[in-house]
Image 1 (cartoon, rainbow, N blue to C red):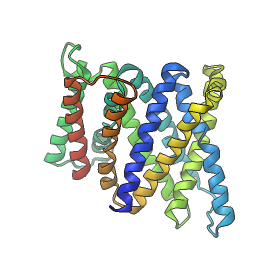
Image 2 (cartoon, one colour):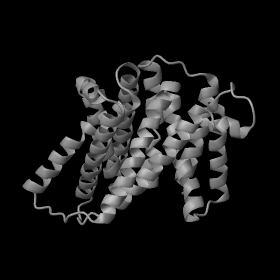
Image 3 (tube, helix red, strand yellow):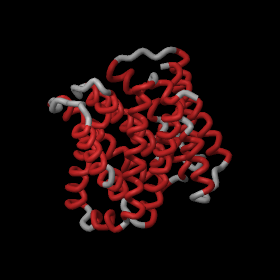
Image 4 (tube, rainbow, N blue to C red):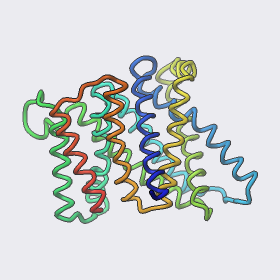
Length: 299
């Protein structure tokens, strides 16, 4: 098995575990913002330390990042923070596997945003894949919603999933733009510089927000360090694996392999959260997964 495949599977696994930890903490100890803050505050110091060691012990050198780098990083960081908060809120409404499947609409939303904003062309097979994805979202929205298609698409769960997926797409594009502006030949160093800078900005921004809006939540995050710390570690490991896989293989193939996360999510939902997945949810997850995989292979 090629190395990039192993790394892509590892990235999906780390991401699933991180989502599971965030869901668990948000249900018993932390708010959605607190569970999101835990992702960054426990990973930023480690990333900065790794970057310092890499630059201090090796011969690698990197110029100071440009204003464009910080702009891309800030946009991507803000989008990722918002998407993560929406994800945690979604997990409070729906079971874990369905929540992860909703978020995987990211690929569909990225294609749609590209059509509207950049004028990207979408082939007939690509349009068919998008429509299958819409059908999957409608099924996952649940039979309890009456009314037309629009009403089904704007249910709270669907709205949270679509918004989170779109924002994760924005953050991915922004992070790629930032990493390309790092003046270093080593792709691993570019990834580490970008991750260290962005997570530091995110930690500072969320700390200010929590002090302002949720007094005492930072203390609860540090009080839950035995669990919250693992969120930071799995987040850091997952992000680095994604960046590394992208340096070794076409991003479309990496994303295709990354859909194994849906299998991990089902296992986590059933085995750890003891949640039952209905037949309707299985059908909706299958439709949305087929749409995502089709788009990934067609783009």
